[in-house]
Image 1 (tube, one colour):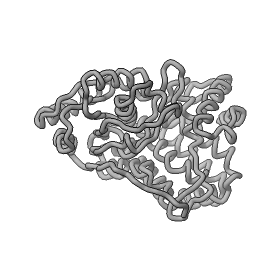
Image 2 (cartoon, one colour):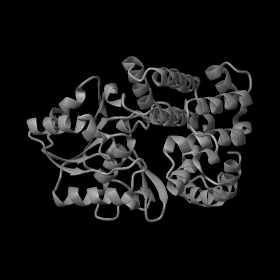
Image 3 (cartoon, helix red, strand yellow):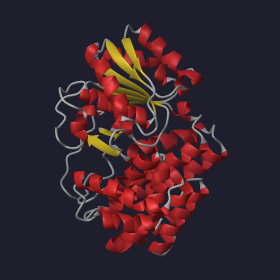
Length: 381
């Protein structure tokens, strides 16, 4: 085990109807007003919006609203939220929706306590030193944004999809009610499953130190995702499977799986962000394209772990067989595995590599992943 510090300050309220208590949860934390952040209207159609507003009103929590958050969240909308929060001196941010909403809420929370441009945090020009408290009510399981301090936002002016990470924007409290996730389409269930797996296997394959416990934990997460995804595609109303899927998603990126590891990185996310930025591909869909291609390119650098993955997850006896099995499963659940599946032309690879190469520099990965290498990986897709 490598030395580590593990701290996660987020309280999870998990279960049916817990969203109806969000006003009380916020009030109990001494908050009197919030910025309510949500997407493009689905929470109004489902009735969730009305229940959230009722809970806020019953507990005397005032609110302003920011809607229109899209699946690849935009910096321009984050800046709109920061302006509202500053102008009205709001005390907290409440995100109701999926990972993009939670990520936007975190960026707003950081920007509202900063005199400069919030993008400074994303390009490592400045460090987050304070932020408004964040609360979330999740309607989709995938990113674990409900229990981490990560936020990914796309700069719509420069087409750069970058991230921040700080415990200061960890949600104070997140509501995870699997019943709210029952309306997720089969398409986005598949993309969510891919994202959860990606969160688990990036460090699993790239770490120079990866204890057996951590490997077993990752393998359990991947197998649970595969099992529950298949159940939910056949029976979307299966609450038990939905609940397990949601909790597995949270465990995949709340800081637990990499604790005690060393030397890990997130090359698949780094490359995928260019697909989202330039072609507006859903994040999970982009990952299912990148992951098999990257695995084929990288496998010899950690062949023992790839062989372990094949055996423990799929019961197979070679690295190549394990990679093929994962790629086949992605396709089986309806997630793309080739650039062409997402209408990305082969002649777009150079632009994708240039875009991802700039992010590699920000993430300190440029030496291992110059744009030529990124292009080589993408050609395998």
